[in-house]
Image 1: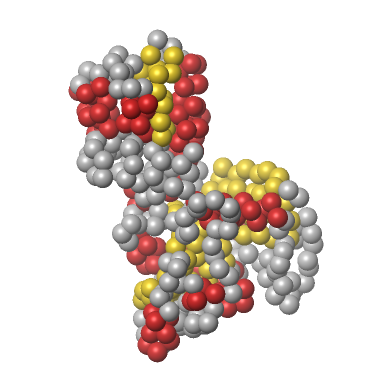
Image 2 (image 1 turned 135 degrees about the vertical axis):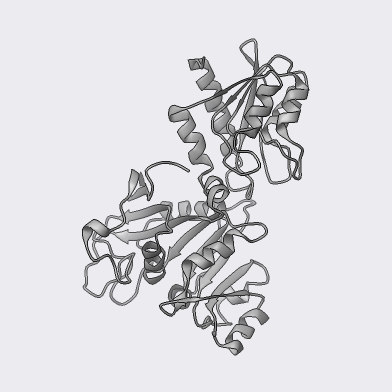
Amino acid sequence: MVSGIDISFMQRALNLAELARGRTSPNPIVGAVIVKDGNVIGEGYHQRAGADHAEVAAIKAAGGDVKDATVYVTLEPCCHTGRTGPCTSALIEAGVARVLVASLDPSAKVNGKGVKLLEAAGIEVEILNGAVAARARSQNEAFRKHAVTGLPFVIFKSAMSLDGKIATSTGDSRWISGEESRALVHAMRAEADAIAVGSGTAAIDDPMLTCRLPGDYKQPLRIVFDSGAGMDPASKLAKTAKDVKTLVFVVEGASPERTRSLQKAGIDVIETSASEGRVAVGEALTRLGSMDPPVLSLLLEGGPTLAASFVEAGVVDKVMFFVAPRIIGGQAARTPVEGQGFRLVGESMPLYRMGYGQIGDDILITAYTAEEEW
């Protein structure tokens, strides 16, 4: 029977997991708390890929003496050997009496097997549900989607005026959103495995696509969807490609000369089949999901033509729209999603689990394209 105090300890484990946000990919973020006689005797979290998993970190923090204790862990303990040993074995050998799990691990190597091993060893296992379980699943939405589908979790981010414009009719877009929103975007970049733009955005904005927050943050893989390999070898992306990993998707038959100039700059170039003359989005995502290490999360930043390709292909998982308190107007001013659009309102892409909050003077609207978490 799960009690209120159990929920409190699990909330603590969930908070611990968040300390490693953006630092563990391709592994999930996981927190663990060990309690005996009502007191916390050890806690830990998975800090980075290759480091101790949360359960092992918590056991070590407790000095190894956790016999008959209760363990609260945000994700089902693993039961296979990778860069570290199986957490199920560590828990069984430590002699814990009870394990509470906030969410099951959907990956093929686990997917309930960890729970069964613990139960077979005589350990009481309880799997939570409700709001705490939903939060645990949400923490690892990218990991969970990739585990089930082999594809990256796609977040479509855009900043727009109150009347839905992402740039003026002259193409000016700096800055629609405020400083606080832009800082949050850099935090999002630090958490994402990859960030993508189209060839138009790469040409017009000449972006760096890096996280520029102070501190030790990893840089995402920078991706440009550039069907004809027309990216300027003198662009910031090309000039810094040897320092920050950069990938360009082109279609089969793209200019060999332009492709070679990009490769000479240190850019990885991947060919896909063409979809209406453009890079096939679904094929590109499959390639990203099968890389070593795989891309679990992709932040889609622009522009409206690339966004339309993702929306129309039905591969967006989450939208994050920053709405600024300004009106731009203009029939020629661009909107976040262009392309062909949907013929009927009833055919358009519905959104679920919508939330909103104020970021400085802006409003951030977040929503998902599926009703339930992965």
